[in-house]
Image (cartoon, rainbow over all chains, first blue to last red):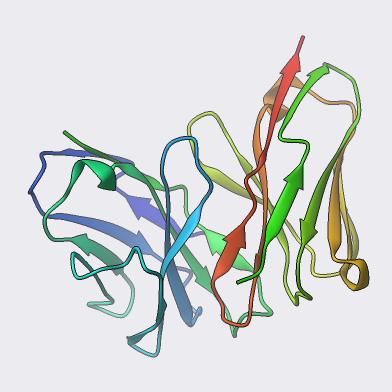
Length: 114
Length: 108
């Protein structure tokens, strides 16, 4: 069965550094998402991406965040200058035709900012 | 956005017991999914169930969309079932709203 993959599984970075989290969605999917989960809390939506542009974003997704689909297969989330509060689990998801279809989630990247 | 509430928040079971987890949502939905978050933090897709009933081994799920709830049944629970169970549904957009989860502990 096709699956969403994410790299790295765990990233440790220092405050103020830039990080790029990578995701490989399922190949024929059209919608792509990033979610995050701060330890002990529920999963929160960050951003959705369709047709090479952001379609929705939450209040969390400020100017420090950006997304890109650089080569038609990878989907990346960049945090320009990390803060302690960016420490969380980040999940990528992809979806077929639209919101009536199943979202497939990757295993997540645990980001630790020190 | 849509409100997603889960109950109970915590559940402790003896191995072999059965359980029912509930997910209520505040608005009509066209998509609902259940996930299991394992101790390593990974989200495992369990069910895509906008309506009706599905079964997968010892797990089954039922969504009654008209009454705005979904149930996840776990039968003959095992210690490997421990973790947090989330339900999630989209609102008018594609973004998922997650519930706060049910933390399940199965003791041998």
